[in-house]
Length: 568
Image (cartoon, rainbow, N blue to C red; front, side, top):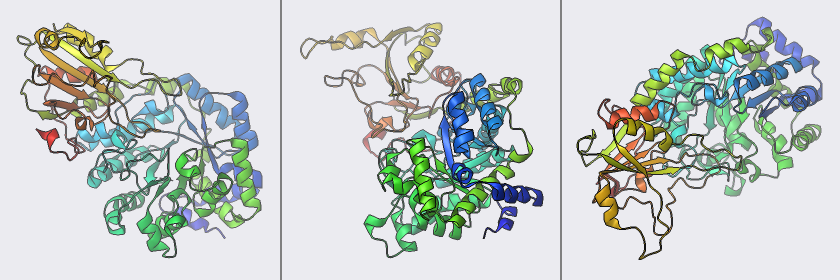
């Protein structure tokens, strides 16, 4: 039997009339509708046929929007909500600003940029802006904040998406974000339980491990989750991450081979998250399209088992028809009991009721969206974050601020992320942004072009030394999913673009998207981190290079990567 009275408590705080809606809705739902509510799917565009399938055939409980234009998001959400008998949860990765759902949205900055300001008020501002801009286009659910701790500088996915390597910093900024976001009627999902950032691997590619002892986990990740749960986190997103110490403590009979990722672990979902932490909100899996999920168990078994183990919603699908069939089969065969199914669906409905979705039409207003997205107040916050988050990590040459009387000719080496499998290419690289700004200041700017000559026939060393007063590196390699490394790959042969003139020409290295590239350029004496980028980062960087603005940022992580030579 479902204890509906629990929904009066943290984090849903439902009134009697809300609980009555949950009860009545649940009692009238068919098995097909209940099955569909378990699915949280993804959408890329206002595809009418696909939307009709999600609303009329699958009866999906929620949809995550990938980034679209304002007009397309509004159209997509409108079609989804008009076609759904039960209002839908509409989510997005609102981690860095409204740009997480809409190309017109404000990019405040990565979570690490925000933490680098050293001021928690920007954590609150980030949460508020994400909520306001998301709501304006119909979102009611933020897959944020990320509460992973960036302990391992080799981790290819956490990095600047986190608030840093200090548990206290992560907790403080996440708490500010969550309070302001949920206060505006947008649910937060603290992620990725039991915590990423220990492993150097990516759960998109394999099941990863949080290797902390029970005591260390309780003191760090555990304290973050317990505190945020007590503060009212409505949902927790569970990763495809194993936590062997806790799994074995909670179930001593487990062998190593039997330990499962949290998304499939009854020990971590029920015994730890529900019972020990008293979490009464909704548990959603991380994307089940990841190899970290698929590699743990055959998919036909894993799909229903994720719900049976304790997840309330199943994020994304590999093949929707097949995954839906797997879920139904699991229900029919009793893998998911009727009681467990009703419990999960009731919690989904309770989340929706807590957001008052059952009392609104949930259709976004295009004019309101146009007014809110990228508004002046939000852009001002983005500008402040850009200015306050740029850190001078290493300054051994004392060449800052740049002296225009001594420095005339600048050679720029730019290292940019390239195209990915989805055809994404950065529309405007850092070089294209900084080159006109430096020329406006009176510098002569040359972009490095690799010489194709073989050994013995390369360009003369003295040509660079005699012709340039400064070498500026701009490294814009973003961390992202489906990576195995975040190291710089230098050009062949012999690293043509490596900083090899550091003893002869003053050299500055700026890393815009990854705080750990000093590992690859320990010979550089002046090193700057921006911890991410927004539209104001490059102008603010130029101001700091020229001394018009001071470097005030704090360092959320150890940019020296624990190496002695990076500090020389």
